Image: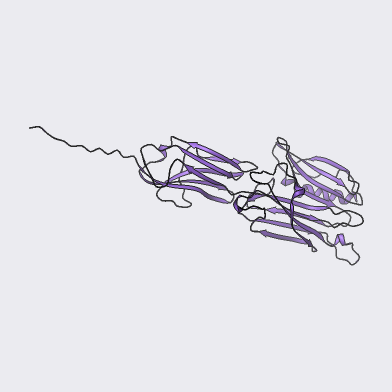
Length: 340
């Protein structure tokens, strides 16, 4: 039994620690829970490598949990789990999205995500115990609430959406075109979905989690430009701007640009100085920017378009725009007369 534990812990390091945060502000450890005694042992680990399990594996098996902790906020994240037993199958749950963030899977409320379930070690003999023939697969969902970030959330309160059984070895991929986090405004939901594989309980070991991962769902950003109204005629100096930015994605570059002519999606313009904001965080952000003295970005009179756009791993989105006319030409009317 100890050999099984050692081999499985090798696999755990090799496949899961790559997901752990490698920045100096994070610490990683593996928690081993013995079954059925409940003895717990925490073992600090690097972000990659191999290491023997700290305790021998009892006949009841052992649960391994991979954790990463933000040393600045003390927020802990459970990245992966494994259960090791004499005849219990092995299952791995991996969630993928269009965001390459490698600490915790995350996506935006309007984007799809994918769940890969890899199962090995299932038996099918007539005398094999039921716990060796199938595993249970669960889907949970939990809202963070308005403005929530998930910090300190009690995941035991998550709602169970579905339960099924997997009875064959191999890889299954599920595609979710839209999330199930509850909320009336589907573009503004905040929360998470969790997918878990569990062994079945039997006389030797309780029901145990074989693998689990969750994905965070963040709202779609919105914004507004104040200070210029649509179709406004501007003479001489450009007015000050107030730019409201709401729910900016944790990995985003948001800015206000201008270009000559009518609105045109995807057109590249000139960024207004002071309007550019880069977010590199773990949760969405909201800001209000004040911009003034930007007349030098306009090199000609005529019709202009001002756009508020945000770039994320999902592409470029326009949050707001306004079209106006600029006329800074000084005209003088005069007459010339002579006296005879």
